[in-house]
Amino acid sequence: MENQHIIDLLKKNNLKVTTQRLLVTKYILSRFDHPSADQIYHDLHDKFPTISLGTIYKTLNSLKEIGVVNELGFGEGAVRYDPNTKIHINLVCTKCNSILDYYPDQIQNSWNNLIKNLHVKPIGQRIDIYYKCKECQNRDL
Ligand SMILES: [Zn+2]
Ligand SMILES: [Zn+2]
Image (cartoon, rainbow, N blue to C red; front, side):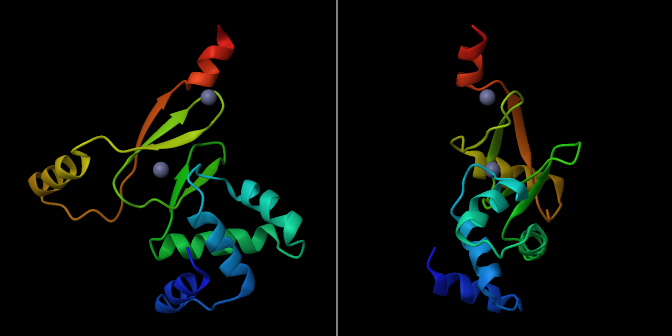
C-alpha cells in the first residue's frame, strides 16, 4: 500500500500520522502470515532502531479499533494480527504456529445467508481451522 493511502486511512480515522505509526501500519498491511507484535518489532527494529515494542502495540491497538486489523488471541498470551478483515478462514498449524488465509468458493454467500437467517449484524468474525501443515506433517514422518 502506498504511503499516501495509509496517511489518508489514518487521518480519516482521526489518528495522528507519525513516522512510526506509518511504518507499523504499512508493515502489517503487507503481511499475510499474521505476525505477532514481537515479530513486527523484530523485523522493523533492524532498520528503525528507535521503534519500541510499546509503539507497535499501541499502533496495532488503534488499527484494531478502526477495524483495519483483527487481533487473534491464541491463549497463553500469544496474539497474532491479521490485516485481512474480510470473511475468510485462518488455517492454523498447531505445531509451527503458521497461519494461512483460506477462501473457499461461496464463503461470502454462505456467510451472508447465515447472517441474514440469524438476524444479527456482526461487529467482527473469526473462523479458524486447526491442523498440522504439510511441512510439519513431513517432518513427523
Ligand atoms: Zn506447521
Ligand atoms: Zn487471516
